[in-house]
Structures are given as C-alpha cells and as structure tokens.
Image (tube, rainbow, N blue to C red; front, side):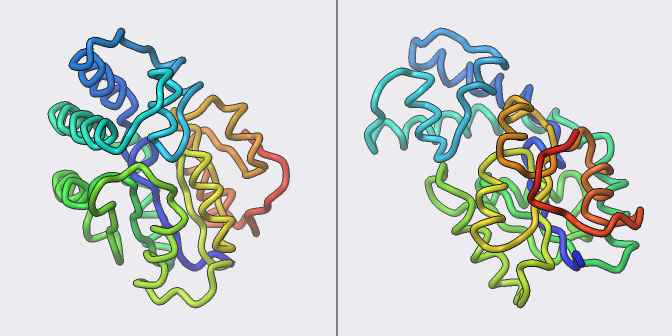
Length: 228
C-alpha cells in the first residue's frame, strides 16, 4: 500500500517544457549554436544532463564547459519560468493525496533555492513534508538524491513510496531504492521511451494517482508493461 508520494517538479507538477526549450535556446545562442526544437530535445534528453548536451552539441564537455552550460541555462531558465503555470491538475492532485491521509514530498533536480522560491511563488509549501532540490552543480542521476530525501523523511519502507515523475531517470531512481513509480507523460521523453522502462505511463496527474491506488481504490503500482 502506498503511504507516501514523492512528486517530481519540472515537467510534472510544473508545466515548464516550453520554458525549458526557451532557456535552452537562449543558452545555445550565447554559444553561437543553432536553436533546437522540442522533438529533438525529447529525443536526445537523458541523465546525467551533461550527456544530453554531449548529444546535442556533438562534442565532449569538460568540467569547465559543463559549469558554464549549467550556469547559463539556469540563468536563462530563471528569467522565463516565473511566467509558467502549474499543470492544470497539480493542485487537485496534491489535495487528493493530502485528503487521503497520506504524506507527500517534493524532490527535484532543480537548484534547491530556486525550487523553494518557486514552491512559495505558487503557494504549495503547505502540501509537502519536505522539499529538496540539488545543491551545487546539478545534472547527475536522481537515485542518490532520492535516497537522501527518503532518509531525511525517515521512510522505513521504500516499497510504500511512489515516485511520480516524467523522466526515465525517475523510474531508474525509484527502482534502485525499491520504491514504486508512475511516469507522467509530461514532455521530457517521447512516450515510447517512457514505456520502454516498463513503468506505468499515464497522460494526467490524476491518472497517476489512480494507478497508485490513491482516491479510486486501484490496489497497486506494478512493474509490468507501461500503460497510457
């Protein structure tokens, strides 16, 4: 039985794919590199994010260049993201979890200070037992951050946790720790790539909760074939 929900932020609760693409193209312009489009972004996106940029730029990225890319992208993203709305079902989904008596938290690979600012901007902090973003240069895998997140929450049984996110890395992280996972088709990857993980794949946040057995009586989140 699911007792705790860990939400992803970017592309899940926050519908920011257009902002991500705008920021990416602003950063690429500063490198005199041609713009890209959403289809290319979704096809190439992976974690660690440094590998995504190696694919996109078709070159190796040393530590100095990676630090510049990370800083320039986030500077551009911070300028545009305040105009981005939550997913249309985000508030309803958070309230459904809260009213069910379960606990919930937020874990993002976004910079921690920015994440906290955005959660406050959207007046969502009261929903979460804990909010964690990345400290320092980001771009790594989510598993190590999920492990620390659950440790801080004193979650004893990872199999009573469901992670709801939009990325393949969310599925990898959850399974590495023995947690359950539902993937929201929020835009980070082509749907077919999400389904290849074997995790349930759903088109809406409320569908994600239904698959997790929250609010509808559906009993379990399996690890079998993806669904849509």
